[in-house]
Length: 397
Image (cartoon, rainbow, N blue to C red):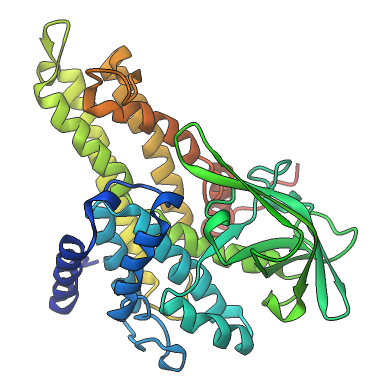
C-alpha cells in the first residue's frame, strides 16, 4: 500500500501547518486536553477552522459541508497537523464535533436531528460532552444504570455519570441511557441528546491526578424531548459501537506518544546520571530503538484505518480497536521504560527545581494509566479484534 499523500493532500497539509503557525496562540500549544480556562480562546480558533470549511470537508452540502469524497484523509491530515503543532486540545474539540458526534448523527440520526445539529457543528456554534461512564460501571459500559423512561413526549432521565470531560463547558450531553425497564447488559440501551442547562442536572467538576479536568454529572428527573433520541430506541449498543469506533479512529493519534518520546530522546543525548552519559549505554540505546520502531508501526496502523475509512460505507472498527490498543500499550511501555532509564529523577514533577524535561515524565506516567482505559479498555478492544477481526468465538464464561 502506498501511504504517500497526493499533491493535493500535501498542499492541504502545508496550508493547515501555516494556519497553526499564524492563528493558534502559544497559550494553547502544549495543552494536551480541553481545559475550561481556555474554552473561549479555543473556540475562537475552532470557528476559524470552521470558516475555512475544514470541519465540513466530510459532509454533504445540504448540511453545510463541502461534499468532498476524499474527506477522511482531509480530516486525518487536519487532526494530525494539530497534534504535530502541539494543539492537541483543539484537535480533541474538532474530534468531538466532527468525527464522533457529527459523523454518527450523519449515519444514524433522524433528518430532524441532522438539520438541527450538523450545521451548528460545522460552524463550531455548539459543544458536546460524551456522557457514557458511571461510578459503578467503569469500562463495563454495558452495566450502566442511568434510566430514561418515556412519559408522553418526553424521556425522564435519572442517574449519575462520572469522568465526563467538558460536561461543564458543553451545550449537550451525548448520553447512553437505559430506556427499557428491567433490561440488562446490552439490551434496552439508547443514545439521547440532553441539554446541559436542563432542570435537574448537577455538574461537579474535579481534577484527576494527571491534572486533567473532568466532571461528575447527576441527573434527577431530567426531561428530554423524545425527538432527541439518536437512532433507534433499544439499539444503543450498536450505535455506541459505531460512535466508539469513530472515537478510537480519530482521537488516537500516535503523535500523542511520539511527541513526548522525542523530547525524552533529546534529553538522553546529553543527560548524565552518576557521572555516566546515558547515550553511551548500549542497553538504553536498544530500548529507545525498540520503542521508536513500535511507534512507526502504530503510525502505519493509523494510516491503514484512515485509508480504509475513505470508503463511505465502511467504519474501521477493527482497525480503530487495534490502533487504540497499540497506542495504550505504547504509552504505558514508553512511560515505564523512561522511568527505568531516568531512575528516581523521572518521578520529579514540574514543581521540583531541576526536574528533567520540566517534570514531563511524572505527568506522562500518570497519563499512561488513563490511556489504558479511555475510549474503551484493552480487554474490550481485544475482544473486538478477536471476534470481529479474527472470527474467534465469544468466551461464554
